[in-house]
Length: 512
Ligand SMILES: [Zn+2]
Image 1 (tube, rainbow, N blue to C red):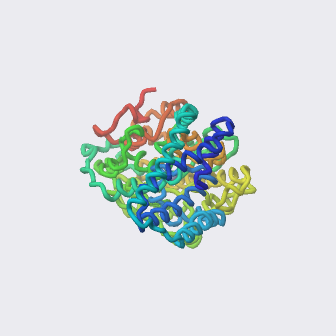
Image 2 (tube, rainbow, N blue to C red; image 1 turned 90 degrees about the vertical axis):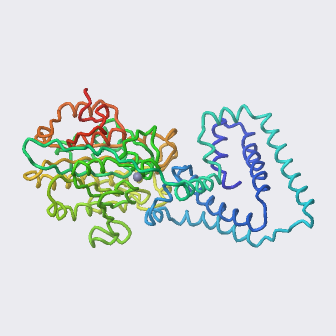
């Protein structure tokens, strides 16, 4: 029951303080749990199940209490696809306390308990039947008297069922089943007809795609934020899209979705894993695409192309043994470009604003906003300190974008050069008590779904590719776009023609 304190509190809050709900929700959940656990209460099996549930629930309990996180399917997917460093960034004295106090101690006590078996099976069955009956009667009584209240709260707040502990455990089983125990889908090739439209000046194209992490549009100076979080690029002529929504609220969902040709409403992870994404279509057109990763991995986006994971100790100045600053992504770029020829694309996956260890994302000399929250149990920082540390990550990201553009400019004599930056999802910084990200999309606040998207192209690039730059600037200011546009817009921006491109979604081609 302790683990369900967050949902009890929420229902109580939603019932506008009708005090009866303080007792009713725990009572109702107790009845449900009695029924479920009575049905699975066999020796050995029962104890193992309860041990796993207690440990996972203790962790979910901490996350729900501190960050208002819900352990729905997308969240479990994210947990499983996080690397060790990401996971350890959540470690703090508080989270370890919760794990020990509500997970390990109860488990040890439980293991000491001897389950006394009834002498005869008939007695055992009778006892259980009686227990279940009492629970059912209890549920019925609550339903009869309070059905209306629960129904209205439930209908308006369908996310509540995701808050019931240990729902996380059931989602984990579902994830393992979907990921490891289901037969793979048949692979679909997309855009095999893709062709580069030759530029008038005959030069090949060099594109860098910076794949952002956890940057929200709200805190971008380009999107109207009052603080200067884009000091390094402000004179470089970036085109900043004002209204862009993400596909998901977590990396494991957004990343494969945004590079796929599936719109958010149709997105299916298994399908995405078994078909070409936009990087593959570019490969079909003869572009050499490379994925370089300084974050939690490519989530199968780079499954068919050359890929490099940056090691945590790749550079003495830029890495600390557990993570690297994003400048590391530019370090090997010159060599890669100089060793290749023809059309190229580098997708650089940034660690960006990955929390809750925001302060580890940027070097000290970048910290323009202070005091900054420099601990991972961010709930113990003031809102001002959290905003400061988060904004510092955006300033550093802006620095890396500027460095990328400066580097690309040095290649403009040999290539038509272009840069695209887009974030995978946003972040909550304490608005409505929410922190981090990963809220179910239906109820996710705009802080988690409204993302920055910038494009840098010179007038000459636009001219070579037949892009009406002025119209793109206008569309960026007023149009409503989303990750759905990325697949088609990358092809339009690169200058690739294929039947797989939908001009209605290519921002370069949309008639404004
Ligand atoms: Zn992410």
